[in-house]
Image (cartoon, rainbow, N blue to C red):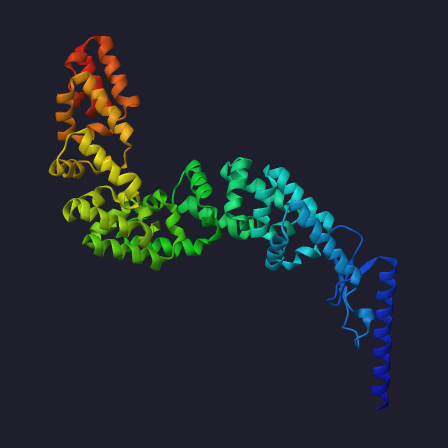
Length: 435
């Protein structure tokens, strides 16, 4: 019993000794007590964890969180708020996401904010948005952030302006580990999709959220897509994903739901719906309720089931076109410009659904080009019979070839289909035959 009493007295004296030491250190301004049984250096720079001690006995105000610490946090809060032009509501939202922000010294947090703004050439509003969405990014040392920013630019060739846009979309990228997160994802894209550096840079610039997933998730989703779309080789799935890498960001059940809807709505076989996705993988990124269903219903009512099915099979992206601003005025333009009745209009659309994705000005200018050189009646006859004549580039094909024929003096011998539809090899042979 006596030994137990001695032990209690020893512990009490030891406790008082620790407390007195902390109190005296605080008076000298060397340490600050953070309210969590931990002493921190308080002389500027990032707070450094020095050590911990047991919670004091009793509830003496000596060990309560010092009022001056609250005042210091208030000062930091005000400094951050003013530096980023935040409202009271915005700074509250930011601190709710990461309350530890106020544990960083004012000097360091403002220094990090200044670095990001200068390095990214960012305006205050954009930087505020980035920090509000991912406040942890200003908890890193400037040297760490500089290394990450340089990594993005070195690997993707992004300018600082482009990098700023990427981080505006996904600011959490600044908090990811290069070794554990970013590099494995980048390696997977390079090895699996066989994309060129330029193509990969564009893909990730547009869809930076893809860097948030890990390679295991990518591999599982790729394997599922290969089976669901009846693709036989990894090269084929690479082509499909390469057309629309954004589909890797969708859950497999969401993709499956849209594929099933397309198959049921268009009465397609498994292979037919798979081919539809091969042609235009972005179909799985469209909303059924907001895009595909309303457009499909309108097309069926306007064109009929048979024509609609053929149009969607050849031009699946038509399901993403606007009815009021795209498809409807386009049909009226074609009917009027070519003097077509309903049957003639449907026949023309079935032959060349791509007309629905072309601008009225391009169609009109191409028709005018043919009319000026072959006469209006003959031009209309040829174009209505073969509407693909309207899809060739005037700048890169029609005008240069016509000028070449004029220069050599045989323009009168150039049939419209030869001018437009000949491959470069056949056109050169034709020119040689006239020489």
